[in-house]
Amino acid sequence: MRNRLPFGNHENSSHPNVTIVSKLNYKTKCPVTATLQLIGGRWKTIILYTLTHGTKRFGEIAVRIPEISRKVLTEQLKELESDGLIVREQFKEIPPRVEYSLTDLGKSLSPVIGELEKWGIENVLAD
Amino acid sequence: MRNRLPFGNHENSSHPNVTIVSKLNYKTKCPVTATLQLIGGRWKTIILYTLTHGTKRFGEIAVRIPEISRKVLTEQLKELESDGLIVREQFKEIPPRVEYSLTDLGKSLSPVIGELEKWGIENVLAD
DNA sequence: TTACTTTTGTTACGTAAAGTAACTATTAAT
DNA sequence: ATTAATAGTTACTTTACGTAACAAAAGTAA
Image (cartoon, rainbow over all chains, first blue to last red; front, side, top):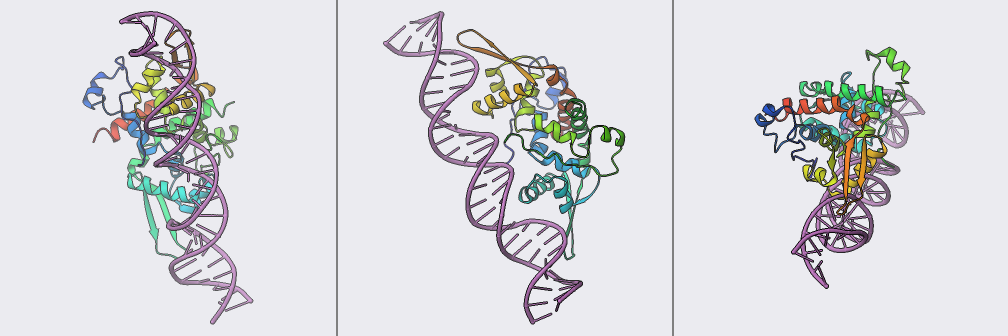
């Protein structure tokens, strides 16, 4: 089973957005968990971050994230593709060429990744 | 080894913050990865999110995240504490009472979690 | 002709992380 | 003496991830 993540209610009654909460069935579906189901794996965010600056080949991604194994990179790219966050384009060439890029949905994550980046700069790398 | 995550350079030369980049030794340390080392586990973000609305007892957290096992919850809480994101307060009572709350550093993550929440509302729960 | 190169994967196998169920400690209440 | 309540811990199983070797396919060099 993939991406087993909580879907309970992580709020208490003092949450400010009460109206939105009821509209979205907030009691049973947590938006943070919903997001984490798509980008919450060990590598997905950093893969998406790598693609933020433009289309990349499989090998280019692998070089930029040297700690990930090629096997897991393949797996994660497949999941990101089936979740609609990236697109895979294969060229009929030898040696093979495969390019990955963000979809509009994937691009819409840039504020999220931007905050991760900002927090890291201000709170970790600043030391 | 805990939190083995990439620390390579996931940027290309077209990144806008060139000045900041050089200041922070951006070539060897990726701020997104730095953040993910602290909150990138499978459960940490949702634990922090649960504490966003105030101090909670161990059992209260467990109830709000029913999918996490108590064993892993204990482990993750210890890591979050040793990373300075939460504090643990134990009361000398029977039955025991232990309360967890965000530190200032933990509270500073609220814009990050806020973006995760917002994206989930707009792109997943809206369907 | 034979072997080598390049790139994107896949396969078999080993290790690490997470899940499950049962158990512990402690004291007050029944 | 037994039960209840809370915050964990322990032993064991399952899932996720890592490693190293190999496959496919055509062009190039010897």
